[in-house]
Image 1: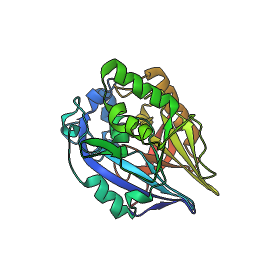
Image 2: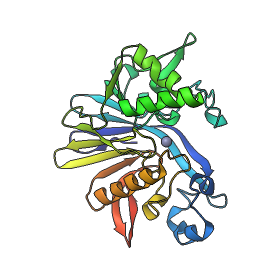
Image 3: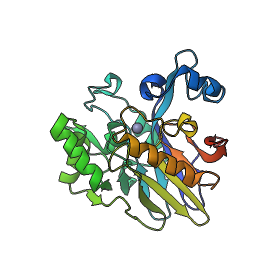
Image 4: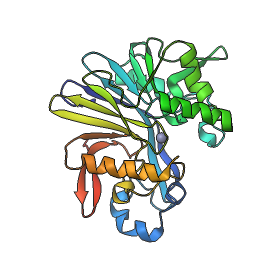
Amino acid sequence: MKRLKLNNVEIGRIVEYNGPFMSIYDFFPDATEELLAPHRNWLEPNALEVGTDMMLMPIQSYVVHTPTAKILVDSCVGNHKSVKWFPPWDQKEDSNFLTGLMQEGTHPDEIDYVFCTHLHVDHSGWNTQLSNGRWVPTFKNAKYIFSKTECDHAEKLYNKYGDPTFIENVLPIIEAGQALLVKDDFELDKFVRLEPTPGHTPGHCAVRLFDGNKSGVISGDLIHSPVQCQFPHWNFKFDFDKELAAETRLNFLQQHYESGTRILTAHFPLPSTGTLKAKGDAFRFIYDKE
Ligand SMILES: [Zn+2]
C-alpha cells in the first residue's frame, strides 16, 4: 500500500493475514439469508465469499507517521501465541508481519509508541515475541500506551478464564518498564488522541488523527464489517457488552458520515480505508481507491 496521507501525517499498513474468517451467520447472530439478500450485490465478492457466506477479512496494523513520532496501532496476532479457540492462530509461525513492517519502510526499533485499540489477541500479538523461551517487547525503543480500563479487563480475563493474552502480550511490557497506563481519552500530542469507544471490550478506544484541515480515525473493532453500516445493531457474537457496542457503533456512524473524516478500519476488506455516507436510513462505506 502507498501510505495514505492526511496533510503531514502519513499512514502505512501491514497485513498479517487476508482471507476467509468465519461464516457471517456465526459472526453476526442476527444475520439471516433474507436480510442479506438485498445487499449481496455490494457485499460480494470482497466482503462476503460467494457460495460459502464466509466473511473475508484482513488482520492488519497501521503505522502512523506524524512529524514527530511513529506509532504502531494494533499489532496483529503474533507468533507462538496460545489461541486455543482458533487453531489457525494457535502457535502460528510466519514472517508476514515483520516483513510487512520493513516493506512499509519501518524498522521495529524505529517505533516510538505502540497502541492497541483493545487487547484481543489479533490486536496485541506482536507487542511481544519469544526470545530464548521468554516473552520480550518486539519494539524495544517504544512506549506501549495501554488503556488502564482495558488492561484491568485483560487481567480479569486471565484470572477468571485463563485467557493468556494478558500474560503473553501485556505483562511482559509492564515488567520491562515500557508501559504507559492511560485514561481512555489520552492525548499523545496535537496529532493523535484516544477516544473511548466501549462495548466490544470495556476499554476499547478508537484513535483520532488530526492534521490541519484533515482528520482520520482508526476504528479497531467497534465495527467489523461494512454490513454493519447497513445494520449497525448487528453485534459480533463476542462483543463484551452488546447493547453498549451497538450504541457506540451507531454514534460512530452518525458522527462521521458525510464529514470527510478518513476511516481506517481493522477488518473491512482491503483497502479497508474510506469515508462514510448516508444511504436511505442507513450508511455506506466508500472505499479509497488504491
Ligand atoms: Zn479484531
